Length: 287
Ligand code: PMP
Image (cartoon, rainbow, N blue to C red):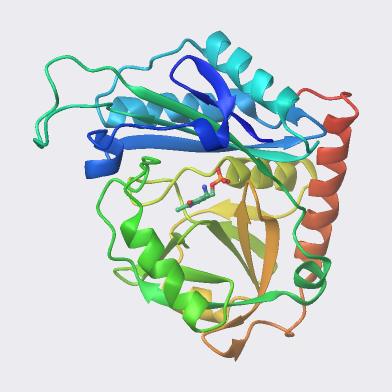
């Protein structure tokens, strides 16, 4: 049985109900987070809660919980779930109100926390790489907010599903932005490149981890705008996210990337990421 948290109650997932007048349902008026948990230890919890605060501020919704309260709620859900490795989904909406775009006068936010089983990325995908396609980014101009109105991301992701690919990499005005549900890095002339954080992309928590690990390993790296031409010339392309970790892309729009195999910098980063995760699971490092 999966236990979830909904508005002050811990209950079975099957029992959890929200009213149809919830603005999350009517307008997608809410924000969310997905926090990876390894061996029941949340990874980068404070960073995820800080990004949640930024998303809430961005949609002008007061945070219903202090960080310590969030931590307690999340840890209770983590303990109750069957699996040691989890993705904790949490969502806050602007609650119920009449069907009017304007905010309700009095807001009672809806808070929902759901544990999901987290499986490590498939070994074959890590060994052989995955395929991706590109598409023009047609989302709004506040992609730095993690909002539940994900229809553009859903439609963009489905393009890659239809093409039997793992991700849709988004381009705007000739620049690499991110994936439909991931951050994107490239390797060009032996240098790891990441697009800078702007309002057009989600500030990925894994993106930060990868840049920290690159610095710790003295891997040459730079944060700067990346053009579509550079993306297509890259010797390596990586996708990163809390659930995908770091994933090599070996085919882009049907063209081979680099040698067609995951590259040397990917192999190093993958090993460093796994070692970092395992240190955290052994509790020897503050995540
Ligand atoms: N960009 C988008 C659009 C995403 O949905 C995600 C996954 N949440 C990411 C980037 C990666 O973010 P994170 O590393 O925090 O999972």
